[in-house]
Amino acid sequence: MNKLTPIAFLLALIASCVTADANTRPNLVLILADDLGYETIGANGGTSYKTPVLDNLAAAGVRFTRCYAQPLCTPTRAQLMTGQYNVRNYINFGDLERSQTTFGNLLKQAGYATAIAGKWQLGHEVGLPQKFGFDESYLWQHTRRPPRYANPGLEHNGKELDFSKGEYGPDMVNDFALDFISRKKDQPFLLYYTMMLTHDPFQPTPDSKDWDPGRTGEKDGKSPAHFGDMVAYMDKLIGKLVARLDELKIRDNTLILFVGDNGTSPAITSMMGDRKVQGGKGKSTAAGMHVPLIASWPAGIARGTVCDDLIDTTDFLPTLLSAAGVAPPRDLTLDGTSFLPQLRGEPGTPRQWVYSWYAREGGPKASKEFAADKRYKLYRDGEMFDVSADILEKAPLNAAALSPDAKTARQTLQAALDKYKDARPASIAKQAGKAGND
Image (cartoon, rainbow, N blue to C red; front, side, top):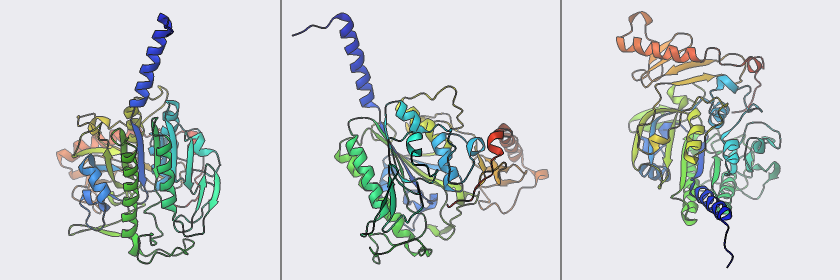
């Protein structure tokens, strides 16, 4: 038997440590639901729909009560992927500014196998998913905008695929996701699962009594009658993913984060016990921006925990990097804060406020800009609301008659707004927004 020289032995020992470290890094699965507000999930108190898989993940993991996205999907996706507020980098609806660095780029550089599956809506160039760090992609609305549900059009690594034999788009995306994690089970991977459900058109799913495998197009389906079926099917598909992780015996070391991209469609009214909640997608109220956030990682986080800390979508990039043990580049500006400590049951560094710069089409100025804490919300134009008592923001507070608490909050929130007063780069502000779909 050959003996290793001292140097060779040391190199082999280092290599074994590196390999062991790589093998123990968690797999990362980020699930983004489309048009799904906080009120739709049973674990959050929703009573209109069946979400047993998500409810179970919440019961055995961490459920957040104050997570906020942007009012529409592309603005949220830009924040989620880059860890920066829209004021810094958002130009056009349906696009992600080409110079941006995403969690896909950073985790790929750190040795993760990466894939994105589902809705894209971030630019039509064939190689964009790979430019933003994803080794593989299986997408809807990448190079074009075909139907997404029955008999869909999808794109696999930029290659356009059209289906006409009763296939269901969310099933096909889920199949790809399951295949990816099966192929990459022996190395750390990132799966960014950007579900098409539950965005309108509200159409039957394969589990609906009136499912029609011959249905084509998206011109019908504006009635909310099938929304509940779509929520249930979304939950079912997540269950299939969790089951595959169990089968592969990698579930314990996989961090799953589930979040919505904005509030529910205004066409939908849901119940939370005896309270009605009308969807507010597109609005800067809680109904448009308050989204579910559930985390599950059996080997790595607390179990059965409810966290009331403020979270927004800029926080996901630093959280994913922290979970993977990856330090962000020193020259990368981040607005988000990792909530990994809260996942582990530790105090962490909770936010004192969340901020939003929102303009659907981009452009030089926000249509809505505010900072908010758990009780108060201050807009750039000076309007202030006590959202704990006025969740629909119908009655602005009288600035001349604020309570001591409100005065203190106003000072803090104004300081937050001041922080971003000049944050929009001139190169981005000069570019006009373009109309797009949502």
